[in-house]
Image 1 (cartoon, rainbow, N blue to C red):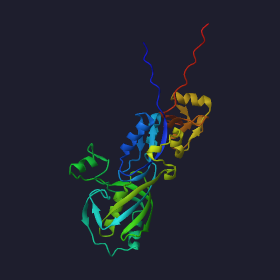
Image 2 (cartoon, one colour; image 1 turned 90 degrees about the vertical axis):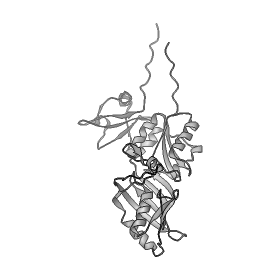
Image 3 (cartoon, rainbow, N blue to C red; image 1 turned 120 degrees about the vertical axis):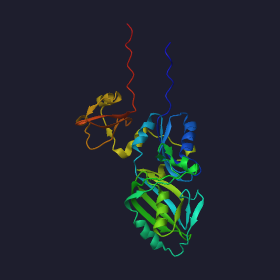
Length: 303
């Protein structure tokens, strides 16, 4: 007896405004309960105390998240001069204090300018990066500190403003994926001859996905999977080509009018995401992921 296929759960994309006090995994767990499916993933981890934009993929659209991991990020937070913490943010315990009463606003702005552009950054111990197969935050909980090789990141812009609190400065940052704003705040403190930590971090955008579009997890809105790839310049194909894409066939670039480095999100004429293709050999493209399923065969009427 043939086993009945279970009905497929929802597929789509969500832009969530993460509340403080929740890990990114907590948000995923809550989304699973709300949407009624285990197939939920996220792109762009946020620290528990941080708020702001977190992207979720649901159902078959979880496979699209890999194409969002490298998107640039935008943040706003507060740099608190005079105190270093073991987590580089206000969630940690103060480890060292400094008298930085002589530091002026102009000093902070000048120090910030030195970090704009391509820089090498040492990731914090409390992070999800793996060293020798173990995540740094696990080692940190065991009281172990290891050497972390600096990694290249890019600070596209850094706008520093004074606040009503002495030696607390608001920072708006646009940066590459993989940048730690906690490390940036700490490094600015060191550059000023003392120390600093980060407070009230909020992510305001991932690529073109902004906080204005985000919803609290309790009010999550499931969008079509095609929305997730809007920053990758999707291409619409005709019905015949769409059928070949559903079967994951390798195609000639000229057939779709593609060019450049890819990846290439391909939509059907109804605007639904069929697949994401990538370059393959000379002038050919192949599927990196296929979301659409082949249309069921029509049964021939019995005579």
